[in-house]
Image (cartoon, rainbow, N blue to C red; front, side):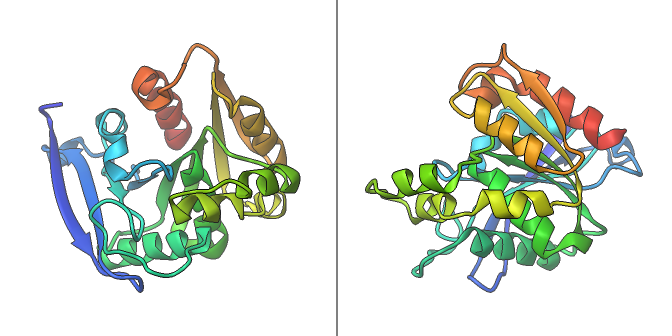
Length: 228
């Protein structure tokens, strides 16, 4: 969208440099005074460029940031064994280094939902609200089956090691779960039940790839939730 400015950069973290994209209106006056910065958290199959289609919709009246986790995209390589906590810590470090003002809103997709959850639990004072789309809320039995596979990415191992049933009930931030027509429909519903006071929006007409086919409807639900 021509009325938006796209900027790329990098910020330090305890795990090395974190590469990020930033979308915001070219006219600063268009940014609402109450609109918090929105951080997009990518799935383990991709990096921050994954949000290229939906980010401009979400950036209507606010700044939107998408960052590569350590070892992903243009961020520095990561040689250790990451956890979801690793990615949560890296994202907070990046935001702090950018001097992000006030608490941020979070938007996670698939495994990015787990990162959003962990950020909200570890750093509650720096998170405002969270939106989770297509939540991989798997119980221990399902996770063990997934971990029996050979994964090329350590990120998948981090995701399938995350104890959703223990962490999600601890969320205290206002949370919206968006469920679409995918294999994660039922897990998303389960996640919404586990989160105290969670709002659930189902968009059965949105088929994969959700953030491309459902960019307008998902962003509309997200912005309505974040601005109410």
